[in-house]
Amino acid sequence: MPSKYRPQILGWFGDLDKGPYSVPLHDDRLSYANNTYCAFIRQDHNDQIFYGCLHFIVTILGSISVVGSCTFIMDYDNPDRGSMLCLIGIIGFITCCLTVYYAVPQLYHYLFSRYGSPIIFNRKTGKVYVNESYFFNFKFLHHPSVFLQPKKRRIKEYDWNDLHGVIIHNMSRNALSSTVLMVCQPGTHQVIDHIMLDPMRAGAGSTFVWGWINSFMVHYKSANIDDGEYKSDQEAEFKAHRIEGEGWPEWMVEAFNATSQEELAEIKQRHHITE
Image: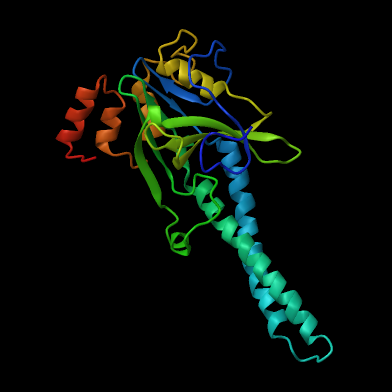
């Protein structure tokens, strides 16, 4: 049965239901939670170093190969081998260009997704906040101009009601799965954006993070706010480690702790934020 969300995402494995889950969190990605909001990191530091180095090497080798393939295309000195070398060069040039086109955004992703790229869920206002590298996603098609903007970011506020979870897999023998939030138009299944929630987890159907967040948003007992890296009374330490210096707007950091829609509206009005 296909996903009910359209357009369907590549590698779709299954849709996830909202609601409280009884399974407690067995995960180290919860960074902080209090009675108002929680923050999950989405970038493991060791993975970031490994994959960053890997894509750096691929980018360098791919760039060198692009130049090398051009020499095959232009080598017509030998009348017997010239056409064959040209064909090999064209195929190699296209392949190497696609490789670099894929590797450069991935390199930007791992270089500039700092401090775990936390995602914030406020259960009092029903808002979700992201501040992440523009390349922290699974898109392949990018406008060439973004290659000149390595630090490009997206900083957005979403409504929890418009976010719906799905599981995708990488279709490899390692069976790695990821949880993605499909951002839909209000009251519809029409997808307008995607947010990576829980990337690259071994074993299909691992939904601890999704389940905990759902329980947290409805104040269900299984969502223990002291399960995280920082305890609920260590908000200052959490913000100093994960938030400060990452370009979060001042109004948004205040909005983390908003306890009502009225308080959120007052914060936005004070900072001259328009919808």
